[in-house]
Length: 206
Image 1 (cartoon, rainbow, N blue to C red):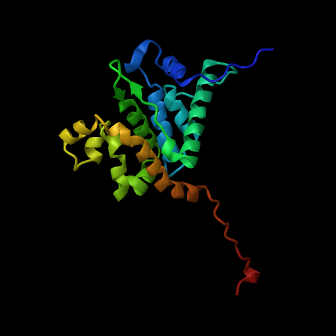
Image 2: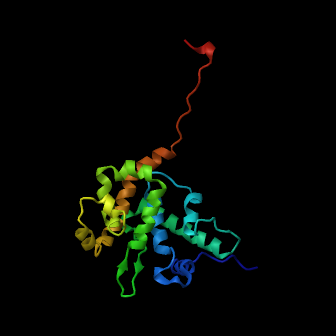
């Protein structure tokens, strides 16, 4: 009796999702990792049914035992749990999964696109806790790699955004850890059951 196939490695999942598209093809592991980082750091929980289809072209993957889809989802959840544990217990050791260009340089735009996709799933909560507060500056190392940076970093000249892209990825791990630290109390409060209000019967009213 053979055991079920294990999860993919992250490189294997990237190749499976991109197919023959290469580094400029469909969503890959780096974008998934950015999405996961936003989900873990978010001020509000998002159920996997909301975001897993985003990875699979908008449809829920077929989860046949040992199928490529089942292995892919298992890989994604492995990374989700890994990021969640790291940011909770050892935030200083968190490291994003970035793409490496053909010349060996770091490519952070896919990761940033995934992160912003995650913000979009809980945009009101992110706005209330981060985007409309003094904490918005923490997103700067991410926003310089994304088109929304123009609107969300209005005080940063385009030339400065372009200049920062060369090194901003170095600040992303610390930014994600800081965002989670700020958002986590809101997330915890959301998860805490509220006490039920007891309704007094008419005969007990005073």
